Amino acid sequence: MQSYEKLLLENKSWAKEKVFDDPDFFKRLAKLQTPEFLWIGCSDSRVPANEVTNTQPGEIFVHRNIANLVVNTDVNLLSVLSYAVGHLKVKHIIVCGHYGCGGVKAAMTKQDFRPVLNMWLRNIKDVYRLHKSELDAIENEDQRADRLVELNVREQVFNLAKTSIIQRTWANGDGPHLHGWVYGLTDGIIKPVFEMPAGTPIDETYQLENFG
Image (cartoon, rainbow, N blue to C red; front, side, top):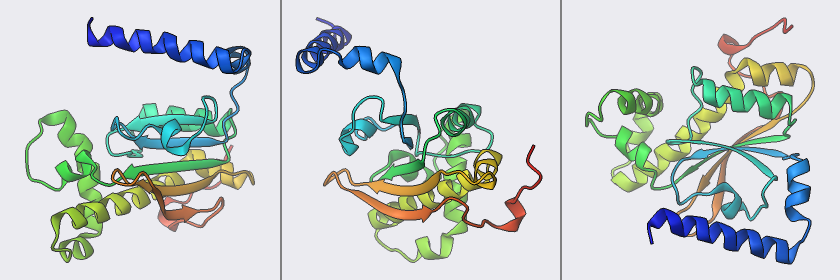
């Protein structure tokens, strides 16, 4: 049996178990999607949003990329954000990084990862530059990487607040609240590291007005 064929068998087993426990599970799920949360997480296979939060399908709207970045030119991310805020009316957006992140560790090196990955990791290098004094003072490399993970999450939350999507929603008096979390691979615990309640003032350089 090929490895991918095992995935199909496991899918059938999972679906059968769900129907056994709740005969109307899929009928209900097919008709409605009303998640309260948008999760922006890392693509790392060890950090599945539903499992680490013990939530059910339909409860979290998910976007994942390497090192959980919010990049202002990423149309994929912005499309997800726009849909989550404008149509699903999510109340909370969570940027969740994780300790031991390979993307963060790669960005701390001077290695050439070829054009596309270099471009992506540059966003993390920019975070390092912003906090260089603090990070360079940390002698232990693993601890320095973990701190960069936390700082990267914080900067991505700031990046969310800089978007016109979030600012327009806040200007209209709606949510969402923004949260920065970090997941621990060694203990499975999520650590909140940063919060921006709806309407939090941001640097005037990024403030927008006269929304249509």
